[in-house]
Amino acid sequence: MDLLQITAVLISLTAVFSFLNHVFLKLPSTIGVMAISMALSLMLVVLGSLGFPLLLEQEKTLLSGIDFSTTLLHGMLSFLLFAGALHVDLNRLSEMKWVVASLATIGVLLSTLIIALLIWSVALLLDLPLAFIHCLLFGALISPTDPVAVISTLKTLGVPKSLETKIAGESLFNDGVGVVLFLVIFNIAYSSEPMQAIEVAELFFTETVGGALFGLLAGYVAYKMLKQVDNYQVEIIISLALVMGGYAFAEAWHLSAPIAIVVAGLLIGNHGRQFAMSEKTREHLDTFWELIDEILNAVLFVLLGLEVLMIIPLSTNTFLLALIAIPVVLLARLISVSFPISVLRNWYQFSPGVIKILTWGGLRGGISVALVLSLPADEVRVYLLPMTYAVVVFAMLVQGLSLGKLVKKQLPQLS
Image 1 (cartoon, rainbow, N blue to C red):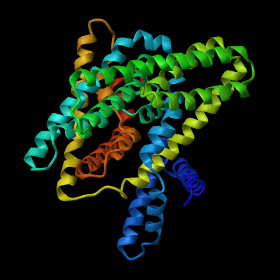
Image 2 (cartoon, one colour):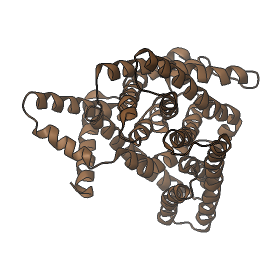
Image 3 (spheres, helix red, strand yellow):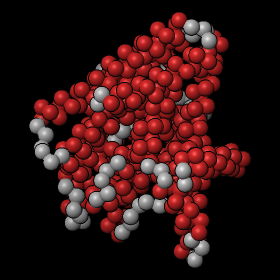
Image 4 (cartoon, helix red, strand yellow):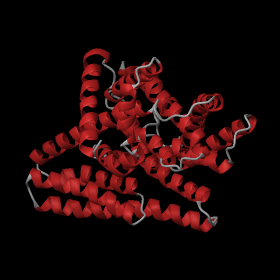
């Protein structure tokens, strides 16, 4: 199948699944379409085992033409991050900067280490060929919360703005930090020449700080261009160029493209919206990016649902490891959230139950899957892939569906 046919099939499936979810299931959009996609995959697998393999083979043909990792990390992610950052209040984020920064850095690093230690211990008990560096790799790819999943869920909950800023801000930035950490550990694990500590620190600093500075520069150039015109068609094209060009240049210069796009999105969504756009432009820009966000979100989770049963190599050991990974990741999330918040309570006012909400609201999604699929097809990936999918599916179908009830229980004023 060529690119046009693959895109046509994906959009058609997304439209049908979105319709079915809206009319019958009435679940949050991303969760609903993912659940229907998984149900379809399961049905096709069952039909294949019963002697009707045609539809299953067609699904495999469709998925074989899609490089999920490249599609998300080097295509869809830039649009989704920009759309998410566009609506984050920079003033509120500035007030919470140390909370967000500590959760997105210390939290991710601590979670990565805890997950690696626990999974490594389990691997030793089960006599599995996973080295500690490979467990660190899993910790890095599964620790960041997915901004796509988190923000789409937040829209329906009506949480206090301060809590929403913490959750959305953390998910936007820890995504970039997590991707950089993953790349650093990947280079250590798969490089023929061992990296020195100073090289690791330099790579991490260049990617994160360099990405933020480049995003600020690119966003400022776009802001100055927006200020010179009052034509919403031209201004939307400028925003598209910022997202696509900014992401491409950041990757070419080995800077963190996700962090760059988040910073650029915050600048355009706040200063750009306030000082460089007319009311008419703001309305059209918001409508355009909301539509892009909804379409790509739906397509992404349809893909996740279709892939989940197609590519996971399952054995007794990998299945057991996948089940164990779920409580391990939740425990690591609890500790990595509790530590910075406990320290910062002396300076910040936190909502009741904030640790429980942040722990259970730490949804994992497509980014973790894209990162694990970017690994070489070796024995390490055979173990990391089922763990990643188990955590993602649990996060979306269990945590995502019950997060609203938890929030209302912790914040009864929302009921």
